[in-house]
Each structure stands twice: as structure tokens, then as C-alpha cells.
Amino acid sequence: MLHLLTSRPTGLAALSRVVRLAPLAFGLLFWLSGCSEDGTIPNPFSPTKITVAQAGISPEGVQYDELNRQFLVSSRTKGQIGAVEDDGTYTVFADDSRLVSTIGLNLDVARHRLLAAVSDIGVNPTRTSPATARKLAAVAIFNSDNGNLVNYIDLGALRPSLAHFANDIAVDADGNAYITDSLSPIIYKVDKQGKASVFLENAQLSGGAGFGLNGIVYHPGGYLLTAKSSDGTLYKVPLNNPESFTTVATSQSLVGADGLLLQNAQTLLVVSGSQSTVFRLNSSDSWASTQVTGTFATGATSPTTITRRLLTDAYVLYPYQATAPQFEIAKVRF
Image (tube, rainbow, N blue to C red; front, side, top):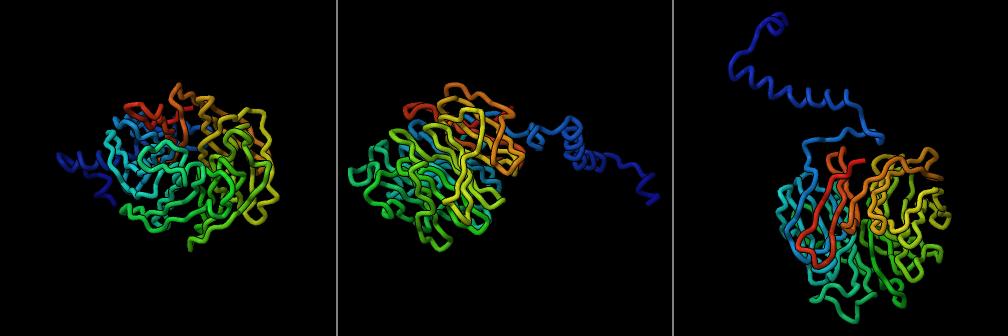
């Protein structure tokens, strides 16, 4: 111990020690500068914005793959799943002829799965058809290690007479997936074996002539939080009794609510496309009610949804218009 205290490294040894200690020093500085209101420490080394020079992708969903250090994005107009590097490089990660339009994504790291909601609203000119237009609701499940399709599950067949638009996906602690339908007042459930069922169906969840349920997240308290785009209603849906769902009280208009991200048990981020805003909501009563504690203006970018990166950052997806020559993924800063 005396030797460790009194010896002084020189040359390359000294440089090596500095390099090893640098992350600790930076971490200490971040801590001393204070955490954000949601309890996280911002990471200055992650990019502020990633511009992807790919035309006609029209991405709707995004997830960050920590293991492979890349974003995964869906495509309304092509159906494929793409991978995006920090330098903006885009490659096709997964594809299948049945992927008319891919919408929400969920990266289930524990089970090496990537789940994608599949729909058809007539915007993919090569894969849409009269048989599937506004009728298709499905979930495609890929191996997240290699992009291979391992299952494709038809959800619309559970209610064949209704219009359908499978939108977003949440996965609970047991691996069950829950998928919202924006054109029918339904949340579907797909268990780990791939068996599909109607988890909740209620006229209150309808969006009328507009979009109904959109974003959805699983809360470790044993319930789902989901938002309706048409009027901005936020719902709390218990897993053990979905019919007892309640409305989360808030004074903030969430009209246009799209993607959701649960940052911790008390903090939810909500992307509103029509308001061009990411809202930070906090709850101290297990989501009986909520208050806005921060906003992030996105500008005229048609923001859709949001993902977590490295536990400290949140990134929002800017698809712009379907004809745009690029799309962007931007760090949220409140």
C-alpha cells in the first residue's frame, strides 16, 4: 500500500492512468452539475441530432439497440426495418413481403426479439392491396440479433368486420405483447407462444373519425399507459382487470399524442405530432393524475415517437413528410 501511495507513474503508464480515470472524472462533474428533473444525468457524448439522407422511408417507430449501438426504424412507405448509425448510415435490417407498412417497434432485449406493428393505409405503392387496405393489423416478430423473421401474427382476423391499424406495442415483464389499434377501439394481446387475443375492447377507446389509441407502454406497477390521438386522453389499464381502465387526470391537452416513453415509474414522455411537442409528465399518485414538468418543441418535423438511449437520453423521431429526402433522430432537451 505504501508503494502505491508514494510511487509516481511516468510516461505511458501515467497516460494510461489518466485515460482510465477520465470517465470517472467526467461522471463526477456531471453529478456535481446536477441531475435533470427525471433523475437522469445528460450524456454530452451522445449526438444531438442524426440526419439520415434516405428519401421515402417515412419512419414511424424507433428503438435504440444498446448492444449494437444503432437505432432501428420502421417504414410506412416501404415496410422494411432499417438500422441507423450515429453518422447517419442507413441499412436494411429486416424485411418481408407481408410488411406493407411497419409502424410501432418494441425491442425486447431479454428475449432477443424485435416486434413490429404491421398495417396498411395505402401508402406503400408496391405492397398495398384492396384486401388489406385499412383491414390489416398484424405483429411481426424478428430475431433482434440477425433480423430473421420468426413469427407473423394476424390480429385483424380477430375482428374481421372492422377497420384496422395496428400502431404501437408494449411488452410486459412476462413477455406478453400488447398492441393498439387506431381504427378500432381495441388493445390486442400476444403471449410468448404467439397466441393472439383481444385484451380490451371498449367504445370509449374509439377515435371516431380520427385516430384512436396510439402509443402504449408497460408500467412495472402492473398496468399499461396508453394515449388516444384524437382527443389526447391518457388511460391506465390494469393487466389483471383491463375492463377497469381509468382516465389519467391532467390539465394539459395531449391532443395528437403518439409515441410514449416511460423514463421511470413517475415520469412519462409523450410525443404530440400535431402540437410539435414532447411533453414530460410526472405522477405522484400511481398515474391517477399527472402534471407537465417540461416541454421540448420539435418544430415542423411531424414527430412521431421516442426511444431511450443508454439510460440517460431520450431521442425523438422526425420523419418530416413522406416525400422528404431525409429524416432525423434528435436528442430531447427539456
